Image 1: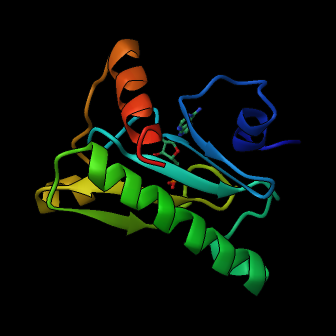
Image 2 (image 1 turned 30 degrees about the vertical axis):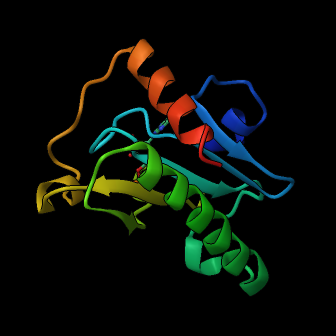
Length: 129
Ligand code: AMP
């Protein structure tokens, strides 16, 4: 069965899209640690990040880096953190999180955003890509 992220890539489940290439996709995390929290994924459905082929892994890092720079320009924060977890969704993904305090990296306190706020953040980030 296709992962929830494959369904997002295929447009079967809606998302706040940030960027797409032939191999990669970026969209806002629906339950963000902080405003601008973004997920970068390979279109190829592989569960664990470190099981990706080296070339796709390295290209995903380069894709994530370009998205991270756009988030940093769009969202006031000290820096963009990168985290890999994968306990919830078995489709490799990188979390890019605007950080101001260590709390923002802890996946415990979550930011509640309206549909309007998600849309605003997504377009602000996209404007810097
Ligand atoms: P993890 O697999 O532990 O790295 O966590 C998966 C992440 O995906 C969580 O931060 C979720 O909030 C996020 N997530 C799950 N479903 C969706 C969705 N439909 N759209 C956007 N983000 C999602």
